[in-house]
Image (cartoon, rainbow, N blue to C red; front, side, top):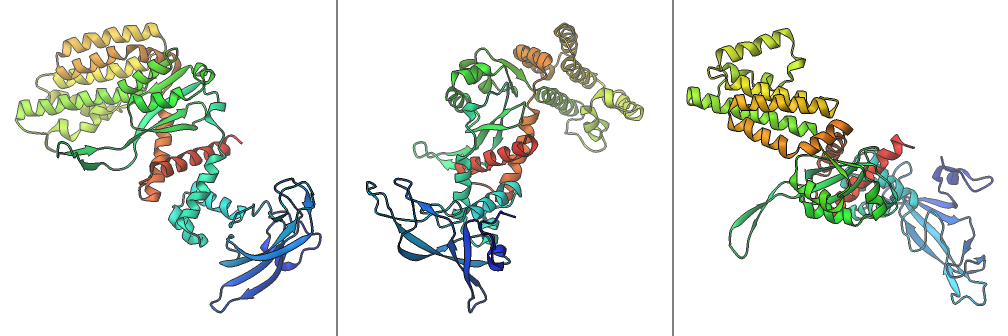
Length: 432
């Protein structure tokens, strides 16, 4: 309940509860809608010189959009035009303005706040919010844009650890190249930059190459960039290139989830190749390896005795060449390597991994080993700092909810506005 400005407000003013205004009259129109006439109860100052004036010049009736009060209402403000009593002021007259309805505004501040809260806090679609409040979609978007301008500047923050990951902005499109007359598939990606300490989204840039990330980083002040100590990314050469160019002194950590995913992918490719080699076809439900394909991808140390027995049965009955068992051992060794707590243990685990890869003699595990070697410096940073892109993935999940609620976006600026506002609102709740 807002604090009222009148000493003894009447009942209509109390129910309407608009700061700095008093209800003059209420009407019920022929179609059932209510019309409320109001006037301001505060003094206004000249926008040119600031001098308070009470001398009335003239008046006008102005319609003001406001929140529904026990249903939709039409608000009419008896707005006064006042004389400016300052002789040296070039403005002779001016219209009064209040905090709720500033100069040249046609909407109350509480309506704009309600629109932003409905979209950002409650997660409602802008079209649904506009319909519920009896306004247009454009007014909802304008309120969101105004709220975005009030967000704290990213340059004033001092993040210590960053996370970078991409997400799809919308579904892919096909465009015809006018020069070659060929159709090209375009996948609109966007990259999210997150503060790993607070989980706040700091920026959203177009694309997933080094150009967009680099352009965003170079706009940050030098002190801002020097304060960043660690950046967590997935195994993306484009992101690593941008960080080497614009954050050369910052340590880069590679996310362990993506490395384990690569190991699982190598194991899956070995299983598929083994089925074609032995049976001449792809796997079927009658094949133990295919029927328990998800069991092969589970962490070995989390298996129960029954699950481990089923796994041993798969290797004994459906792995005549031993390649599947060898690939599974490589996958488990990658997990062991990433769980080490020191660089010395990591080096020993890496030597064991190299031995298992050589014994396996398979292109899938060899390719995985080469990836581990190329990203070894980043893996060392991961082991020492433990920095991952987990909080970036959590934000990407929230971003997907925003897209689904809005049934997709065409304008990337509107899309980014909602992302930044949702992240700032969540941080305000968790860190008041």
